[in-house]
Amino acid sequence: QVDVADSSTLLLDLAFHPSTGDLLVIDFGGKQVLKVDPVTGASTVFATIPGGIAAGPNVLTFDGAGNVYISDSFQGKIWRTGPGGVPGGGDATEWVASPLLTTTGVPPFGANGLAFNNSETALFVANTGNDTVVKIPVSGSPLVPGTPEVFVNSINGADGLIIDEDDNIWIAANQADEIVVLD
Image (cartoon, rainbow, N blue to C red; front, side, top):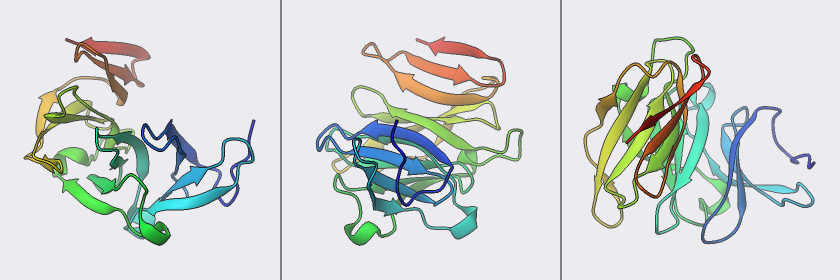
């Protein structure tokens, strides 16, 4: 057990960066992503999420180049940083924004879990309040987002989302207490 220094009490997602090995932690209350020493709990700001109290950083994922993508449940955006974060812990860059990533539903969380398919031609994003999974087509290098579209409806509380080696999408439906698999 490690207490994360200089953080709020609202820590959400965490992952080890696939290139650098750094432990990254979403600090929802602090509207930031922290780089945390997994032994001591010491932290530095990896990136801040613009928007003040409107920001809602929730989940992070990585592309093959090591860039970091962060879902924003309240502003309906996906933010991006480089592999090393933002110099001085500054603001992440808006990668895509869409009304499909916001919600007026219950619970009031839009963009949540996110993952790229194996060929990095699409980013899939769970929208918890809308009970949807949104597909964002991706092309180019660096990755450029296309127009988001609803991929599937009626996932009751679509929350966490992962993609396996066969490109099956696994979704935690937090309002139904079940896991949904799309193949």
